[in-house]
Length: 161
Picture 1: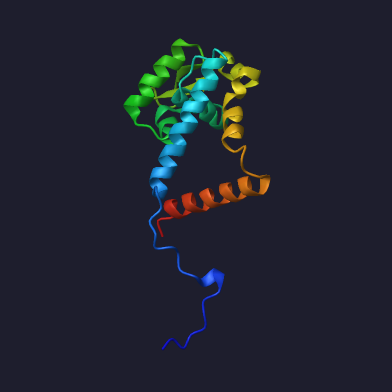
Picture 2 (picture 1 turned 180 degrees about the vertical axis):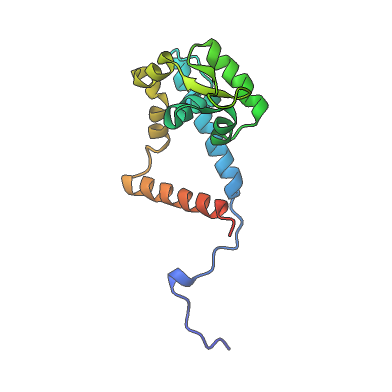
């Protein structure tokens, strides 16, 4: 016979019923839909950028002048993909490669004036509109909770100790 009192709601075990989608699947689907929504916003505003190019420009704006390797790491793409994207962005006039002052073998990636200007263009607020639309059914408190949960999961995954 069970001698223990019933568990409080906080102590109840997680449901044994499997969710329709795993956390990994849900995160992948959310990311895919956000990418699709942001690229649709870009297209509607005649902004000729892919999501990856947008991320590269955003990180360049945040980090300043960096190496291609540092930028690839920040955007989480491999070196070959970064080179192709840098070629596209350089042709579009948004960034340039300049020689490294101390290492003549290395190049530094920096935004051009057009690359800096794009952030002040109201048409470029596409990602903000897509993010707001994605969260429109969440209250401000729920948005804060979601952000907190995802930050905690990310920190847990990055914590190697």
